[in-house]
Image 1 (cartoon, rainbow, N blue to C red):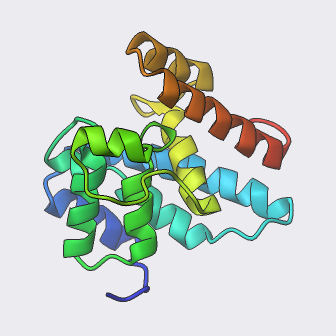
Image 2 (cartoon, helix red, strand yellow):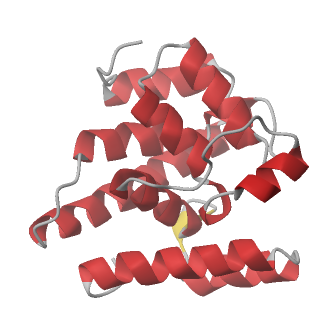
Length: 176
């Protein structure tokens, strides 16, 4: 597997080729736009961010939604990303973007194989964060995502999203 990233056009083609709906593709485009804006701000603040990785990772982060719309789309997407030869850095974004991350205990309960399912790199965190700020192709306040997780009784995920928000906000100095 190469660490070479596909182009934006190739990434979008992968979504369609794997059966993602237009709604999912448009969501991925919106997440990518916001993630790149966030990456640009962080770079202006002097942080080292791989914008190409942010763009491609955010475009394909929901490739698993071609098969399922449950939380399992993260691991399903990881399998698809590996099967089509995407770099491990992109696979990590796909597998680690949901709910601000999935803990080892949660992964075990979900029946996932042992692995790391919380965003680690700055690029992974940017994509996970941007994903929580886009609903129906539109930017929403982070509180909307947090409140939905609380309503679904996903308190730990809500707290992880809140922490991710505070971390990114702290790095940029204000909400992107």
